[in-house]
Image (tube, helix red, strand yellow):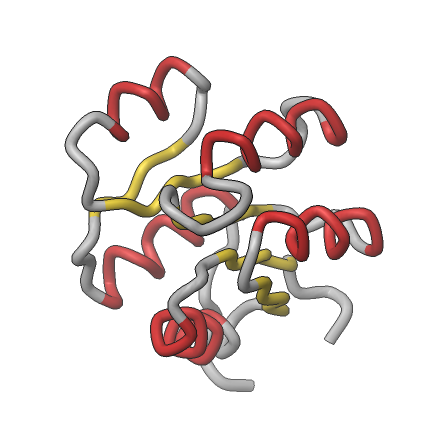
Length: 125
């Protein structure tokens, strides 16, 4: 289904990565990565329309990944930081990134995806 927007989901917590992949996969092509380095490799292979990423990951954290993505892709790809860390909303605003607070519910996740990819859900066809 190449006409669907692609979302890259980056999180080192496998259960959350699988959940977001499953939920978003109903309406989007989803590519997942368990680390910042893996995310950069996947962006090099196929530019997503949206990146949803955890703020705290081992190795390359969300701040470093956002900077690397901006350096590699410019500001063309919307990035949404997903975190429970208190200072993340202000940092995300400074970096011109979106923000989704953990814990989030499925409707919030879908709303963020729709907002940044501008996809209307036509329902089953």
